[in-house]
Image (cartoon, rainbow, N blue to C red; front, side, top):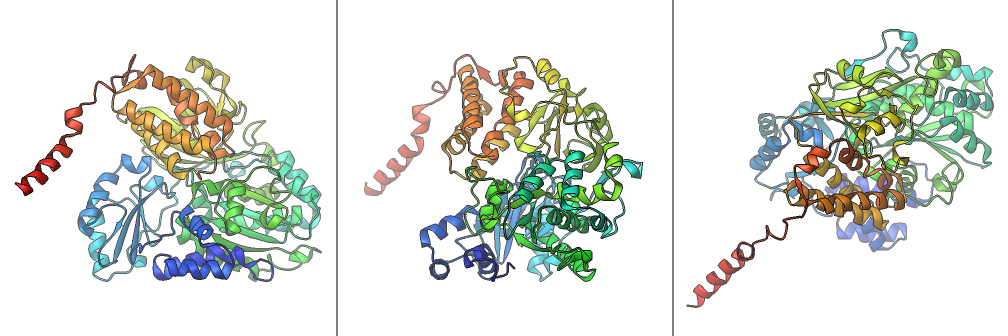
Length: 608
């Protein structure tokens, strides 16, 4: 919990809401009135905060709250069968609670288990590789009194590949706590920042901003208090590499945070852990305790003067947009997790108005390894522009889904062989905010020696020209790699993506809120075979408006997949569109009013 002496009461708000949600299974009107009074905010504002987060409810969500993953990879497996099995066994439809308030059934977007689909969370306990039969058995056992802890299956790490040469492996090798921290005895904060700058280590959550530059800016801002926040809100669909690091290498993360604290002069660290990863909290807490016992956290760490640092965990409440750093900070401050305008960057005025560094799990885990192996050895791995290795989360139509640690620079075609891709047709690279890849991209390398994908205006008319200009893939690399073969419906995948952004938009700016809704309706029209060439043109126009006008990265990247799919797979759209839409021709007034006519006839018959 956040210490009260440092933090105004408002910043305990999300923790209070979690306590009530867990105890009562929903937040009632009486609770809202009491909390609003206690925190001195209006009931309307509080209701806005509660409604913003996916895992807070205004109605009883059931003693056993089931969240079934409805993301696109889940739907490649047993989602529809599992959904039906749950609905049949419980006697309710999705989005409802049983009459006895024993079970609630809800759908949710990606929960970081794409390598083990179909998956679900029940009271935040994970259940993987579900089938219809497993779902029915699960409900029966819960009713018979079995505990969720007994029934759940803890997710496997599925580390499928790492460089054979341990000198070229950064993440997945033995780790001794304190090895990186001990190097600080001979390094000044400025030395550490210079080393991180020279390593070219960049953000691995998707933004790819230079880590050393961010740390330097924060260091140079004088303040009585600074913060380090680990962004463990791994919400990009198809991404789960941070889950593996948090599960098997939490000490590596904590050490990276402490080194960052030393470098910038921060004394407090927070791990913003997504609610979907609650089952990892206990392991992370044990790791923090190990550091405390080894006196590698706390006061005057390793006897280094003024090196004080502590780490605690903050649980999110379900919002994709909180992966954006200013939205994440707003969430921690007890507000709606909406991105802010960039009048100030977090390194200037972040958490509680103090200089704050926000880094991804993978980024922070790389830091102790850098100090441990030395700059020269680190730079010998990968490519000139992007040294080191990259973690990729692989799922979909391949024989070996899981996490891969590869050197930057591997050819895409070689990676497809490595993962056992089955007749790869389309690849979603870097999640729903990434890009679609096709066979024209297979010669490209996974590296940073290319243009930023989200800065391209997609003026290319030829996919081969695009692939040539984009000689590498992955500069903005969150690390998701979803494979689809030719048996899959590309339009259905795109529909899942557009629906996701409609649901996850914070709604604060019109281009993202309205534009993604309109794109979703356009995809519906095309999917039904009523689309026209003008619809395709309007999709491009709206996509560019959303990209150029949205205030945060969610909006600016929300149309990347759609635009690259239209470029790489024009035949998929051409077979479903016409020169002129037959949408009006398809409308039948008699059929549309049939139900109304039947009702009128029944009413008239009762009076006869």
